Length: 205
Image (tube, rainbow, N blue to C red; front, side, top):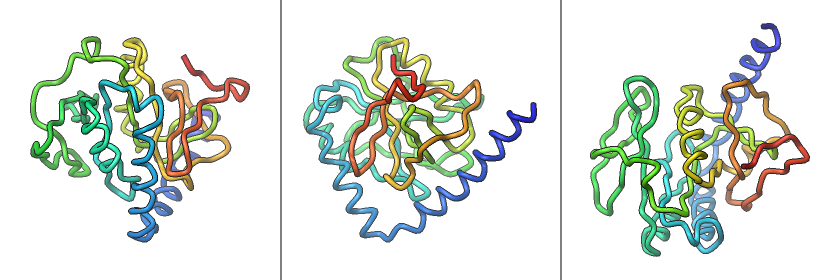
């Protein structure tokens, strides 16, 4: 119990420090990071992805919009998350020009429409999961709601590639983890794409 409490406390400390650090980035630094991220549309696994689930950047998160524009232009189908009343996430198709509606505690823009049946999504498929912090083992620190930790096992069973996305300054040596935390297959930032290193205790499927 004490170890679990310690992990939770350390996570909260990291959330505060990392969110503060990314909010402090200058607008030009944010724009430059978004442009650098967009270049990965030409790299695997994104270059061949037929389905890509991503997010709308808020709270200083690295902006994936320029990357998504390139992926849509190359033929990828884009999905965005929508929070359900039970705290789980649905993925909903995001068409060009579609309206997003602010919803949930953070007023995060969400799409309308029917949820996609994950097992029927065209593959190869990639999840771009926003992260407050990531490490080289594939551990991902989110906002604490648990929505992605509930979604990731379903995507993994359906053969998706799972990438955690954040600014390079949010990638740390080692994150505290709990039993419910779901790892990703790789980390993506403006500095590059790095796959999980199994020798460090990661769990890439």
